[in-house]
Every structure is written in C-alpha cells, then in structure tokens.
Amino acid sequence: MQLRLDDGPVLRRRVRTIAVANGAYLGGGMWIAPKAEVNDGLFEVVTIGDVSRWLGIRSLPMLYRGTHGRLAQVEFGTARRVEIDSEEPIGVEADGELAGNTPAVFEMVPAALQVIDWRPSGILTRDARVSE
Image (tube, rainbow, N blue to C red; front, side, top):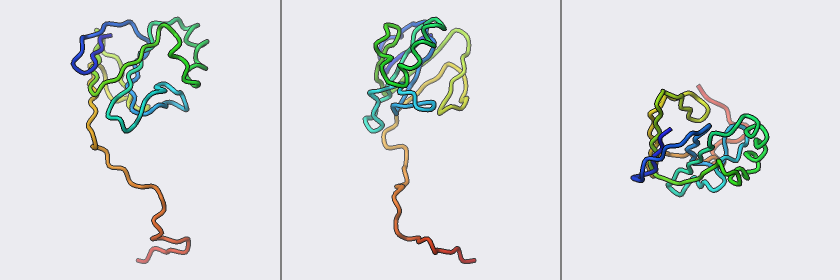
C-alpha cells in the first residue's frame, strides 16, 4: 500500500488495515484511535502492519482497550488529507459501508458538517399531538 499524509512523502507499507478516523471508536467499541478528537480538524491515521492471523486474533482485546499501539506493527499519524493507493483495487469502507475502492482520498473540511442539537427544546410535550 502507498500512504501519503498531507504533503509528506509517499510511505510504502505492507498492511492489514489502515484506519482514517475522526473519532476514537469503530465497529462495536474498538478503540482504534485513542488520541482522535472530533473537533481538532485532523484525522488520526492508524496502520496495522502485516501481522499474522495468530497475532491479529491474540491482540484483538488490545483494540478494545486502546493499547494496540504497544505493538511494533502499529503506527499512528495525523493529517488533514490522506491519500491511499494500492497495486490492486482494495475495498474502502466508510462507517461500515463499502464506499468504493482504492485509490482513495480523505480530506478534512472544517465546519462542513451541520449537527442538530439533541437536547430537548421544550417545544413538544408528551401530550403533543400532530394536527392535520
């Protein structure tokens, strides 16, 4: 795989997984990017090297504890723009859904997401009815 963070050099790695994360968790509570902050304007990029299946299975609990960074095969980085490419097309998932194939570019766009405040506004009550 080829990986480029911002305008840095192209890094060539044999990897099992590359995670480009804005938040710290993925897939049912895996703490994949322990240092990720949703409001810092940066992706946390996690690469898990070419580990054996045995090591992958044995170290799975570390992903849930966020301690997988202790493994020599795990590297972390941060970037506003991430480019990923491979010799053969590889599936790219976004939030658990297949979004396409490599090559892929992820770019942080500040303030691009509008979030609705989840706190109750007090406009509706339990007895509120929809009138037709």
